[in-house]
Image 1 (cartoon, one colour):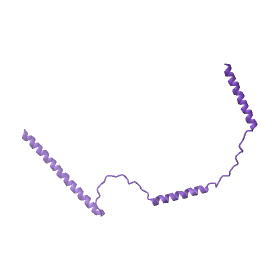
Image 2 (cartoon, one colour):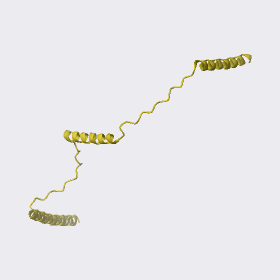
Image 3 (tube, one colour):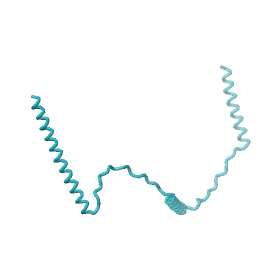
Length: 123
């Protein structure tokens, strides 16, 4: 019984080894085909790489200066097309109250508050 199990394991092992040898032959033939194709194109086969993050764009100081100058020119042209200066309209004269009017209002307010305070004292 044990010997049967051992024989089965050996048979299974031999099958796996045969499968591995077959796969290795396929790999060798695929590599050979790749090499022959890369020989046709004149270059070497490049291995597949994983994509990396794109590089951060860095602007040179000279480029920044050129962009700044261009923007300044655009704004200068924009401002040049506007009306030069709008005409200044005269502001209306500041209205002031005469001394007599101020005195009349002050007396009216004092009389009003005197009446209110008198009503409070009666209560």
